[in-house]
Length: 276
Image (cartoon, rainbow, N blue to C red; front, side, top):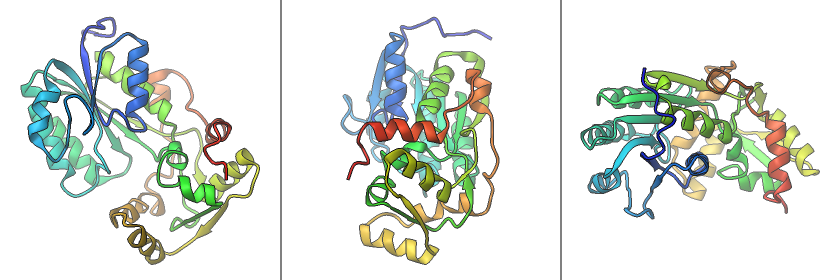
């Protein structure tokens, strides 16, 4: 199979290029001297999943795309939009599509199939929950407040670092040996949210408590803060044990072990992001 890793003249469109994984992919591609276009509402040109008229201008002159969907690939309507975008990308000459998906999410897997149906040269990257959810996303304020109140019981997850995800995505975007492959990524160990709280406490030097709550209680909190109820549905991926095992996509693609949560927590704490 032809490899393209030495061709640095091709432009990659990174949908969600300012997000947790997208900006890291952009940094790594820039470091290789590869041109990048950020696909976002504030990009130039702007990209908006809900405005298909923005897709064509964003795809002009692009031959590969990193596809992420906000807020989550499992949300209603996501699969259809991803499929329609993939068809538009292939028609515009951007055949190389790398899709960020989730482990154990049937709705996300439906979106994967919609993308594949476009005839693209595809790679699917299925990731566990991100370490960076605790310092860049919806768990940030609870960590700062010293309490993770979540409906997860003692269930476990193999949290993965977004730097590892980004490195796998860059490999998939720049090397045709990854075409037609699905990689599942996890960290090196299974952790409950109580385990997470212990590691965060060590890293921050103060007590971070894990407080189990019911699904109904958590949904009430989501309503109070104006967040979609679908966020609560995502916890079913943890509670039913579907992802309670390690996978080895990071080792398979990169030839090394993934970053451990404790190392992530120490590095994040050193930035002061969790300072009270």
